[in-house]
Length: 403
Image (cartoon, rainbow, N blue to C red; front, top):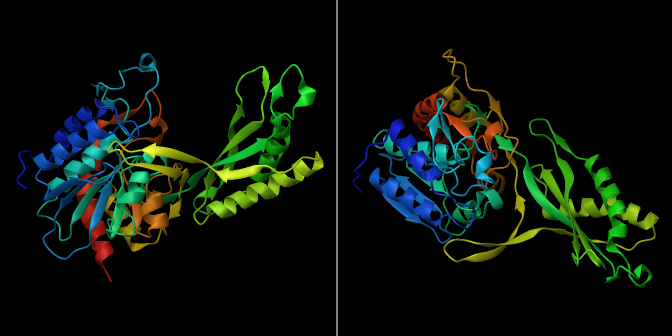
């Protein structure tokens, strides 16, 4: 495929502005997908396609038998909220005060644009292939990456670089996330006659006491820190305020460690809630992992478990140390980049935590701007990051291909 456009940092930023101007909530990434495909084709990628869910994959072929590196960001974004609350309009892609502004500027359309151009810029300079895979539905559990790397017919690179914000550090893992629902059942009735009903809300204090005990008994990892769990929602059904509810659902947000499974998590919830229910003479409650019916823009639907896996690479892994040396620090002292985990979940939980593919993260951008109405990407840091990627990809390719 012959390209009509040369890869460059300035071209990547112009591309990022275009991407910001295309809203792309989970399940609504079609227009953005087509724009990314067009950019890859214009840059001369050797192969470009979209998969069944609408994720984008492009390949830049290497000149030999080197390891295959996959660069990955994601196509979907979180909602922008009230545009009047933004300093700059969320979908204008404004450049001001040395920064690119807007929803997705650093999470993750800015880094997506950089990765897309970097791969094209490395054509003819690498021994192994570069796969650039930008999946759908990362913000809602990672369906796109789960599908892209499925054991039967999925992508299987030798190493993955996730383009989530690291502020120039090398990220080696993160906690995962699971939504758990605790469902209390009662008997509905008219609020004027409470003696004829069993109010499911009466069980909530016992449930929350159990959650409090659970939160105090979380396991910890030397690198990732402690797991954490907190109640984030209470929903009563029926919702009418003159009806005593017969079902109440308490939702937990649980930041989990690698190795945690759905079964082990649910068992721990039951163990902590049961004594509090028994003390009030109440029966059991239903404990389940939350699911969500997701519909890709291609029309495919699937009921997805709301569980994003965690993962952790060893700081001494040759891929990690090669990456840290290649990136270095911005002060010019040739000191290796700082190695640390992310505080949030990424698609690396699927590539490494589930599929076992060595995975690291690198991207410009400050995490504190993610999912806020001040989202921005500093252009000087982005330019530095673009240059680092040109060294990073060959470095990890060499480390992944070493015996």
